[in-house]
Image (cartoon, rainbow, N blue to C red; front, side, top):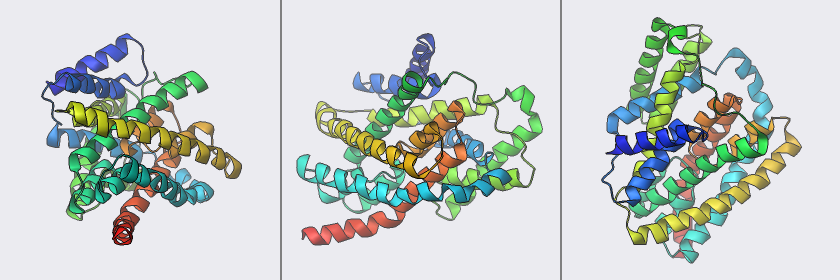
Length: 336
């Protein structure tokens, strides 16, 4: 049922010539089916395997030129901790005192980190996992849906181009090495407890292979399309079994929060233009707090500087994961 919902959503987006049909189509298709009461579920291990393709795609962008350019990212990277702090300062009071969620649910719903990491931290702290899941899924859905529309209408960016060369042009050996790098990187990162193991593990291993010259190409378009499709399912299927109360309170809170995030991101984007020569597209994608995987997909398809965009999202998630548990406990003690 989930695959049918995703496929119909993708087909509808393709038929209507809407942007990113293989990412946004499955998201919207699953959302519509979930609202209709269909029993949807994530793709489990197979879905995670598909996510590793995205990690590989990002890893192939790590070249000697990118390493040389990293110091130039400094001024904008320094804004990321402040960016996270402002989001938390706005989001936490909204969820806690306006929406009435408990401390843990409010705090980890407000934190712009990885969805899975925030759910784990929030559950351990006594938060409502279902509410947090719906709020974060709504944040990602809204931002990832709005970004391509903004880029297409306001900036005239073409998002219909293939995200890579056809598989026949890449070569079987290169594809097999990429698949192996994805799987080995994921399992290796998972073994040492790395956050975002399914993306960061393949990213790191592929980056090493790219810098050493073993991997010489970005993954073929077919691999990136597959990653898009299953990432779309992962977001859309979060709405499975949604009730009227959850739609009104949890999703409603997520929608309002997404508006706050858009305003905050816009302010920081304008500030970045004052301190960095980075392109408009790169800055917008770097400071829109959608999911790391989803924003990386958009960057790849749009032809943006993927290294710049991913560096900012990785730092955002790292700051949240490193600081969130300590700040959460401090706020809880202050409330007592």
